[in-house]
Length: 269
Image 1: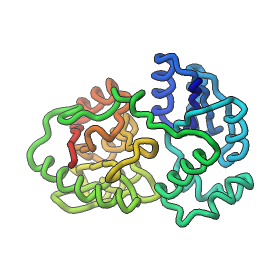
Image 2: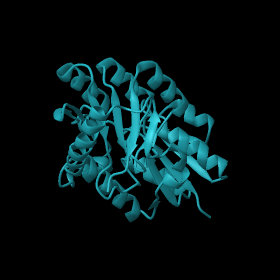
Image 3: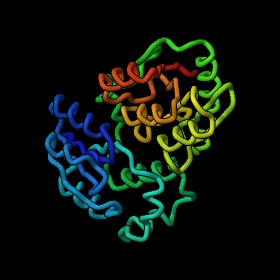
């Protein structure tokens, strides 16, 4: 019998998956990370709590719970991983020391292989979250003016190359100039830095990797993204249609309208 284990990071995405899985009557257990995972998830599904880096305990607990399929969702800041290695258990430390490099893609792909080696099956969560995938066209706010869309198309191409190098998923552009590129600081700080450097009217572009593995690190936008854009006085958020999760849709639309920000989904070949 299929039994799903959800390894949940920060944010709304693990919560949305848990809701969807319960609605589909799936046998689900959540493995939350203390201080990172949103506590409200435990009101949706049975939840067991561990500290970041308790790799062996996680594997042993999932095996005891007879988990067959595994889903990894939610943000665990890259810098948090790198600065917390000294507190990890032996299994986690050995895992990190064996990596070729410490890029997000390298870490997450190695985690999936480690889970497979232990007999678990990492699955694509998008069938449970299909309603959250960004559609093509205007998602929120007004239809953006031509000059902003030209910036968006320029920025999306740059972002695609940056994502493929596993530097980040987001770039901020203005007048076809790259103002900021996401690095270790994350999307929100990149957006704010872009506003500080470029002033009002920047365009934020967020994409998936080429041939994105939907089992991990799929780009996500939500109200927090828009609040950062409002602070930066950015005017347009362009995301890759079909490969970006859009959270808190109703709140997002209200905030976009109130802030004069447009959100568009763009299909990238």
